[in-house]
Length: 148
Image (tube, rainbow, N blue to C red; front, side, top):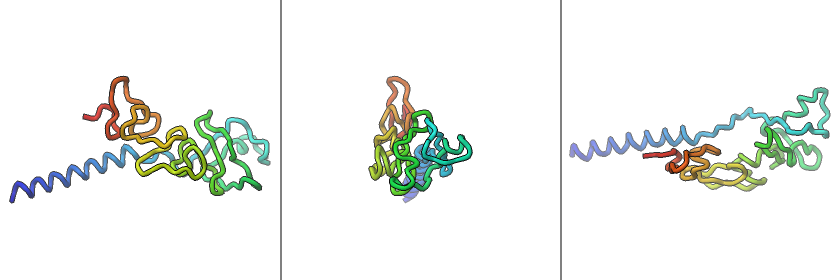
């Protein structure tokens, strides 16, 4: 009886540790107040300041017909591509609900890396998160490079 109780306790502790490591490794790196610096100033925005016209906040309200502020707009030196999805500006290169285009949702456990749904558990170019590359010859296992 003592052996099975200890085994159960050990199993519970290990599952908690792995769960915490998973949450830390795969937490979303994007903050809610993220801003996109537009690569080319927008001509259709009326603003007194040129700087204000060149920054779009994540989730900015938009409408493809009447308020088209983020339809195909390149930002952050080409690392972001903004589109108006469901009346909000979204970066289709990293938004897992609009990955590569509006409404293209990634499956559970996947991240949107450069506009493609990617399993970051075993991808050596996106290990644990987008664009985290493992060293040459090192495998990505469970989101860690060289997990042993």
